[in-house]
Length: 383
Image (cartoon, rainbow, N blue to C red; front, side, top):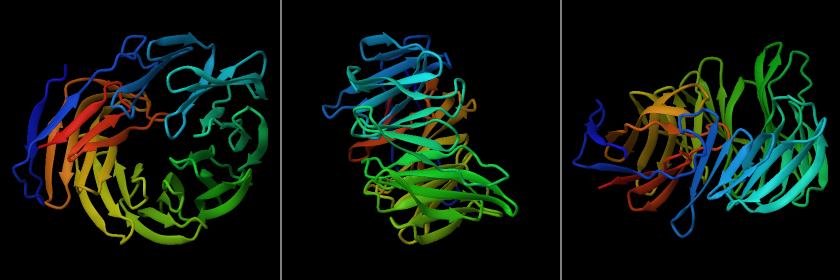
């Protein structure tokens, strides 16, 4: 049971109207170990019927709904952008690795044994699952191997920058509708400072997209229709929010707060929220205007702008690094049109996997949302 304490906060530039925020949390029984364990990973999503699908990953056990199966050892897992498939990267004999692709109900979609030889213990080994059941494996800091849904290798691409001074591990991002894949070097060390680079996967080949000479890349998002790319770069004196079209041309650059740490982009690529600890800035990427700026009492771990209602919805709290444990959580809803803010403090401890299973917000009706990805989904209502 979550005990709710309603607190209406007035910030200097806000005029707070008579509005009430209600937050309803429903606990889903997905944990196979004590909820406080940092080894437990959670995911929950809403089905079309309004129910829930869920899974729990704990060490080498994987549970989906009422089904529990041991896969030993699972070295990595991922969810497809549409939530239909769950991919498991499994260590086999010697240096061989296999893959299991599960449907969202836990049933087996495909099983592929000995698909790749990789160095055991390499922390860069990672699986990415796509909406058609195909998958990609990152098998070193810059190498990606593409497979079709049947587990047949299509191609190997390498995102090495060639810098003699080194580079960070390359990342792969995909649009939520699965129309586009891109890889990027978050940080390339050069003689003049840090740079970053985006390349897109066209067919089965890499194609250079854009290089940022201003600094390291904090995050990259692709719009649902793959017609807009939004990158957050840590510049020399200020952060940079860049919007690129689908040919890599920069359409807009905006100076944002210095040392930004988080990027949240709307599905259509129209709005972006930039965060750093407890600071939040909301930008309209069509005009380049800053729509709202505020500070919360704790660090912001999630933000989403609902343009239909002009509401910025945020989750803040005390998070222990990347452990996925959130204490002292609070939900904020800002009416950007009326410049008012509602805040509700929650007493429960929450768990999620911030790296593999990002939080999402589903619109359930007028001023009603469902925050998913925590072990306890939160229903948020403004009345």
